[in-house]
Image (cartoon, rainbow, N blue to C red; front, side, top):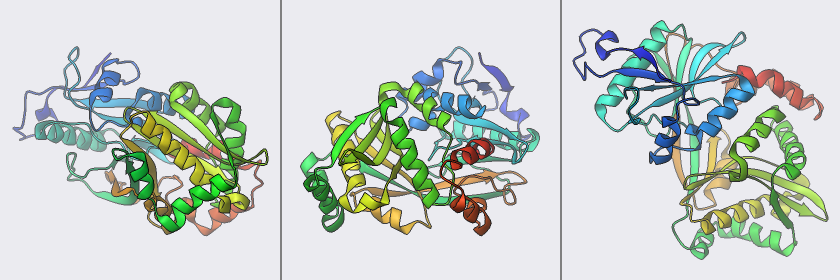
Length: 371
């Protein structure tokens, strides 16, 4: 059921004449069936807007999702900005759109809608006792703010699947990506895919990889909730060498896109092209299903090796901008692995020396405070 957030736009900011009779509501996207219908139809809605993703965030970390919209109760949704309420004794109270999500576009159609929602976000920031409000946008504009703000930039790589499969392959970098795919085929690496039967192999390699990066893995329950909520749309893909799992990735299919989200490998076998094989098999399946895009996910700007790896698949590179609004926006940092807190020498040293079996415990204790 929708609960009123603000009755009129003039109650947000005196002197505003824009759409002054337009109501603004606050809805629960996990209870209001209109949200699922809306995001499935909206061209900019992604995996991260989906009720399945929001439900996973809520079940794993206790975050409460909410949507601000100008649509009146009982009418089909026309717009919306989705957030999660993150309430932590360690990192404070804030609204994030959305935690653990590569990007999450405000879904608006008209300038008037965007202006009204911008005002709503400003009021939430000023009077909602949030330390800050964070938006993770792929496209700049639409939602704006006159408040103090800070931003962080990432890159996003996506592969257009509209060409034929042979053309897609020919657009890969010849001396690295194509060569690695062919090397994996010559080595007769065994490719398999499925779900829970490969979870332990996936999580073990994911944890080992996170240790190499000096960061803890997300807790097991996060992945188990993802698998339960997305069902057959989620796959774990593994590569075997001599009956030994040497690489694994997790992909999720949503609407016309297949998203690579997590992966890990045994570095002893990377030269055999194990990860390249998994990506190529995923791309082939996405193409066969008639999907339009393969999303390689976000990358931090200080990871040039990973950026180069993704570029060599013939991807289009975009800029992701995470913006924080509010009085604490320029002074507060979350504990998210992409921030300096987790990259500090002290934190890196701790995670680098923790035994692999202990790292998941650290992740379980810390990630709920991230957001």
